[in-house]
Each structure stands twice: as structure tokens, then as C-alpha cells.
Length: 306
Image 1: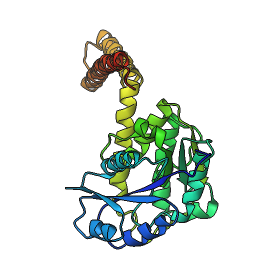
Image 2: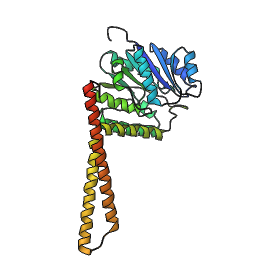
Image 3: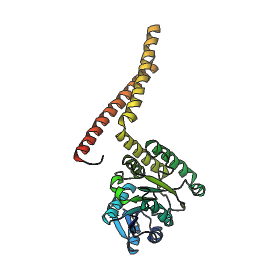
Image 4: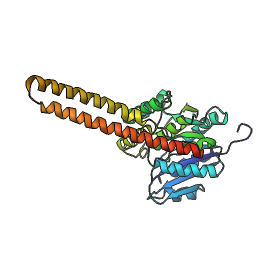
């Protein structure tokens, strides 16, 4: 890639962003070779405005979610022969002038994925509303436990990807959980991730999704993917601990009954509840482990990535 000028494609997922899409597209055009917008079922003029500006527009008949929009954009960018794929939001939150900084490590062969982090510059971090900062840091902490240990911003949508890795990290999640799904897939594939500092702008109309719903979507995605990769750890260990706790309460119940010939209902209910929960979690762990092992074995026999 270093021997020739890379073909850079910007991918912009958009949903009801008619107020900002023109500005984002026009500013992005200065730094890339082609812009693609995914109009994810907008009910306003987002798609029409983008088309008038001469960019390629992918249309979803209904709103499918951020992850679905990314998947469509990635597919089209690869079809167009992109060397580097850049993603940024349509609400004006991201400054396209940072695109060259995101692309540089990929062009130099130093990274497979580059993330624009809001937490590498103090002034950029302070621009993030406090409640969002807390949510992003919490999600990033969870992601660091399962993938890249030094990551500072797991929720940034301002990223650059080498086109050769795009097929490996295309998200299956439809919603906002796609952002962390990509990181988990990248970690499993052994991809190199670099972060560069960026500034973001939070104004009226940016980040319109309810932050609680956003956060729950991401956390559930993490749980789902971790349960697929490590079902014995996620369900088996807590299930075993619950069974041990139940056993302890059963022993306590027997001791009381032996001494007083009385059954303490509360202790019995706790013992019964812990036993049932433990058995359900252990059975779940075993079933998931067997299913995942079968899928992996099938994928290996067919030579598919898993």
C-alpha cells in the first residue's frame, strides 16, 4: 500500500440526519476518494440530500440499526476496491479533518484498525458529557477484560480499517453492539489496533439515541459474544458456586433439624433456590459448550473462520 496512493472510502451510517448530512459529506470529501452513505430507513430527506451531493447511497427500506448499516457499508466498500475504509457518524460529532491521522498507521503498515479516541487528550475528554463519559468508560472497561487491555475508547465510531480485515470483522449485530462486536472479532483474529487522539463535538442533535438503551444494547452484545466464546466460564463457574452455596444451606437446614426437629422455611427456600439456579446455569453451560464446539468443528472441517 505504501507504493501507491491508497483508495480511501468513507462510510457514513445515517438515520434521520437531514440537518447535518450535507455538512458531514462535504467536509469528508476533502480527505477521501469516495463517500458512501447508508440511509438506514430514514423518514426525512437524509438519503435525497446525500444523493444530490453526488455520493453513493445505500438505502434500507426500514431502520435496521447501526450494525446493519455498517455491514452494508463494509460490503459496498470492499466491492468498490477500497484500500482503507473510514467510518464516521452522520450527526457532525466527528471532525473529518482527523481522517488523515486515522489512515496513516494503516498506510504505514503499523495497524489493521485505527480508533479515534476521545480519551487521549484531556481537552477532548472534557468535551464529552459526564454521563456519556461514565457510560463509555464502563463499556471500555468491560471490553478491556475480554479483548484489548490498553483500549481507551471502545465506543468510538470514528475508525479506519484496512480493507483486508473488513471481511473478518463485519458485524452480525444489528444495533449499537456492533461497535464492540468488531473489537471482539478483531481480537480473535489477532488484528493490530492503534488509537489516535481526536476531538469530538457534542451539540444539539448529536448522539440522539437514549444512552441507557445504547448502553444496554452494548452490554447485552458483550454478554452474548462472551457466552459463545466461553460458556463454561460465564455460566459454569457461577452455577457451580450457586450449587455449593445451596449445599451449604442444605447442611445448615439438616443441622438445625437434627438439633431442634424444626425446619426453618427461609433457609430451605434459599437452599432450594440456589440449587435450582446452579443446576440451570450448569446445564446451560454444558449445552452451549457442546453446541459451540460442534459449530467450531464444522467450520474447521470446511476451512471457514470461526
